[in-house]
Image (tube, rainbow, N blue to C red):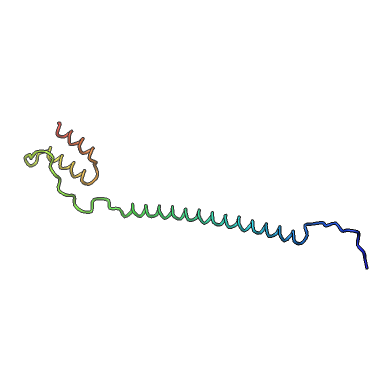
Length: 119
């Protein structure tokens, strides 16, 4: 029989140590890979949601009615009754129609009405 030296020195971690190290590295890589994949999926979902929202907004603008769909209700006269064809009444009626259509807001309507009635 051949005798080996009194004691052979180990040169590495041994079989069990190598297996443990490999398992740790593989587990870490798997965990990191899973987190990266999850992060990418979340980012893609956010981008898809933003694109869908933008498309819905564009569709809503494209199909929004450009004017009133029904004729506006008759304008209520704010001024006292004047003879037909009075330019003041005509201007007030025109302002009321613009307000009812949403072109003028209440503050603009009030300012223009005061201007017309004030002279």
